[in-house]
Image 1: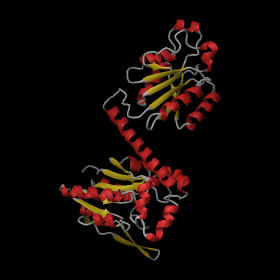
Image 2: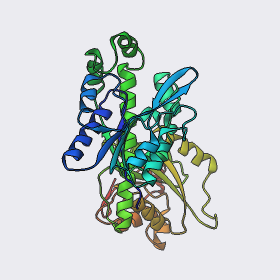
Image 3: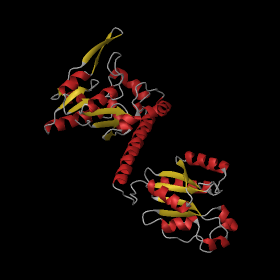
Image 4: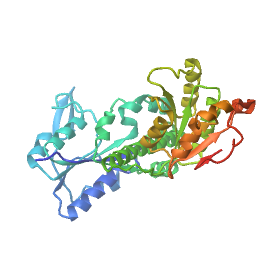
Length: 379
């Protein structure tokens, strides 16, 4: 028996409709003849969500006593014995009552998957372990229940359930999420428009990165070398020279023009260390890259143009930003510079921008043809 498949509905905040979407999917599967059961679904007394539970088989929960109280958890053994094709398990990050076989619900889900049962679950972006500090800085609330990012990343399918902050607040005002006694406090604190906008951005960016992982894996498996410009990725080549800051800012402006644009700065160092750049200058440039939201990469390569192009293609870059050469005129007798070589060899899918800078203006740049378009290069 093979491992089951995991499908997750991801949301930015409570109330966006994750559980509703999960239950709607369960009805569609049941209508097609799939053996689907409810392992555990929390409807939180939301009438529309509660109504969707009707007509679906539910495995009775197991009640556990803890500190004088009684708590109903998913009966993992009963679900395993029932052995459905698909089981719904809500709120993946939930912490089980002490005395349960597993401390966390995601661990229950892992056991179900290992048994060959497909699982459909839900989670909010604030429950991902890596985002705990970010979410606390946004909302002022520390999430005590978390799920390891890798558990969610390993899901076979992740579907984002998105809702604009204004629409979510209207749902709350209409009583579709919380009971009236909790409404005012929620709208004034956790569900402020700024909080919801920031959480929504986190969810969108995290999902985009997950899609990006799938795309890179697909391209690798199918040996696709051509660039697919689904997202602007600008690689900026840094030598450690004084032009670095100019190039980084130009790359950042290019990235801002495209939805979800990304800046990747790369420094190519020779394996024998003879092309040593100023560590202090590179440290300043790394800080600037991070300030504009980019990432800094250090690559070893004796052939700078080849190493730069290999990095750009491996990152599925759409554009490369380089500084105009600081070589002296007589050095061109030895062959073209890095910028000209990259522009020549970039191919039809990678645009190369050669940017002038102060060092060139002092007479150390390209010879007479400075500013000319080289291949697909842009100045």
